[in-house]
Image 1 (spheres, rainbow, N blue to C red):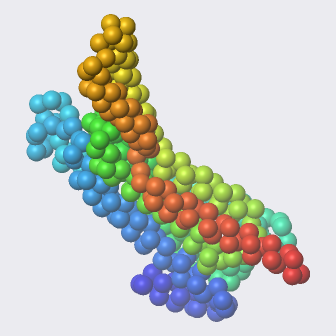
Image 2 (cartoon, one colour):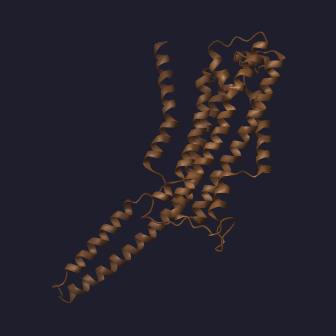
Image 3 (cartoon, one colour):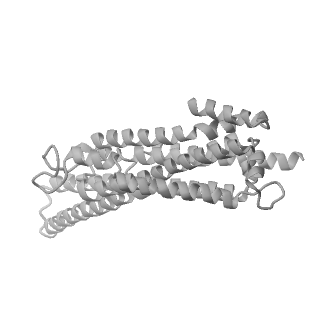
Length: 330
């Protein structure tokens, strides 16, 4: 709220500020850094909650601080790694975020005449004041915001890598206890959904961005990144579930084969009076194999995928319908 009020005062002090219907975009422009910080904090809480739900299949050391006797880290150490960024790396990520986040838009954004616009023209395109003070304050605000975005990108990559490592190194895979393995699909889905909603917020508050080729390219890029963000950390668990499923199916098939061998021996020896036990054994093994084949190997609930798909695709579908209707009615 302080940022929005300060931004409005600086813009109006320039004397050429006429926001009109762009006021929502100006509010978002001056306040979205808080959304980035809130998303980072929310993802940390979601990851910590997922780690608690993951405990039944988690192999960790018994120590309360650092690694336990088994060499595996303790639960508190895993929680710390999952939710805390190393300070030097976070500072470097913020620096690169500020440099790239400010430099790229200034280099690629284009004005109405399809030529490279000046800084004042760019501000005028979005109905912002083009006074020197307003431009200076906006650039400082943009630099700080992009620094936060750089930290969020590093935070996301590091946290997702940590989730992948937890699945690969510290999870005990049990096909009969899948529910704990679904825990980390929640923070990965929230991460992907947060990236997509952040991208859509720009177009929702400034539809004129849709006329910028670079904006549409970035939107498609964000959608692809969001899908990868959701699936990548869970691939390790998927591979382990597939391997465990194949192992259990192989063991069941070996038992089925051994039971069939006994069956054939009894048939060959005309020992047909006590076949009921073999019949039950074969039926039970068949039920086991059918059950094993139906076990899913992707560590997420079906509802999680449907919700993420809706977040990714529904706004695009609505926009395509609106675009098509505009072409037909013109």
